[in-house]
Amino acid sequence: MRRETKDRAVDIAAFLFAAAFSVLTSDAVVIDPGTSETALLLDQTAGGVACAALFLRRRWPVQLTIVLLVAGKFSHFATGAILVALFTVAASRTPKVTGWVTALAFAPVPLFLAGRPAADDPATASSITYFALIAGALGWGSYTRSRRQLVASLHERAERAADDARREARENIAREMHDVLAHRLSLLSVHAGALEFNPGGEPAQVARAAGVVRQSAHEALEDLREIIGVLRAPEVTEGPQPVLADVEWLAAEARQAGAQVTLQLSVEGGPEAVASTVGRTAYRVVQEGLTNARKHGRSSGAPVTVRVRGAPGAGLTVTVLNPAEREHDSPIPGAGQGLIGLAERTTLAGGHLEHGWVLPQHDDGPAPNDKGGENTDERSSEFRLFAWLPWPE
Image (cartoon, rainbow, N blue to C red; front, top):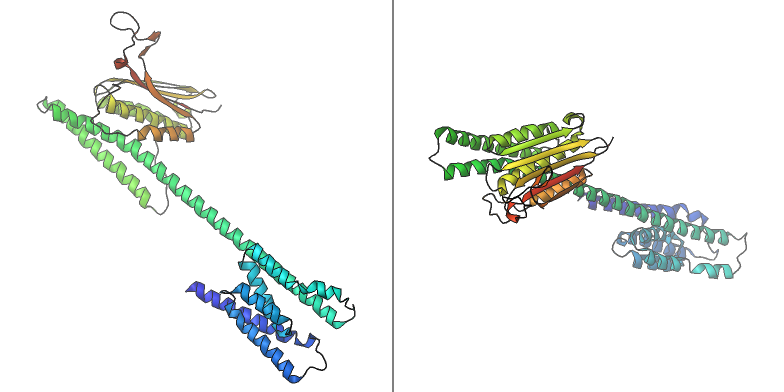
């Protein structure tokens, strides 16, 4: 309704402009002294009809303009309506259509010049003024059309940018939900499985496992509540994020869950020297590695090696190694989305991620087998998760 009201107001303003233009310029009309009052009245009536016809310009702008251009050859009082109609065509139609209408509007110019009008003839000045006004109306209409297209393009870009921002925010939240909840739920699943398969265990062990299940479920609910709170908030605010120093707490938590985690943290200047963005990404790499170790490891207590090394200029490397079965049906479901999200996260941080199967490594080469030779048994392979992150000098 607001748009319709605005359009009506513009139509009325166009009608009033055309009528006022015809009235204010009537004294400058070169009228044949032999023109009768009846002919003058008919001219004025035609001008009034032309002004009233402008209310049809939104529906039939081109047709109306052609009719008015023809009528303008016989009636001066149609000039105001012609200017409005030409402006409408230039502002609302394609350049090709505007070009044809422009050609029709200036078609009398060659005939006018061929007649070699006298420079001091009032009719010459009137004709030149008429064509100048037509050119001004077409130019102003073309400028208006270009400006509308520019504004529409800027709006479209802004909407596209907003959509991209919302999509990126959703992807970030999805990564956070996976990284955080998968870690919590994997702990819960491991200890719940222990309770399921060993219900008659020692009371202290059962109580410890039940406590971990309860704590993991509570923390998972708290994390989920925090993420939902971010989604519901009018403005997205970033809550406390982990840093590289929190990797030690992450390893300690995994040890409490029964894993044999060896953490080798060798960072020049200490973990606090690493930028928060790089440190957070490294933390997520370790978190995903420990989660996958619980999901796909040969046992809940399988050894896991975590190495975090780096120095300014050389970058920060994160390596997570754990023995696992290549063909292993994990009780904890997974679709590989964690590694996909982790690769995206490391790429955004300016680094890269690698993962795959390798033979167990000792400091001096591959681990030997029971017979003293090099171990080539695929069943004893380790899964290696490696990330390199930039650390400028």
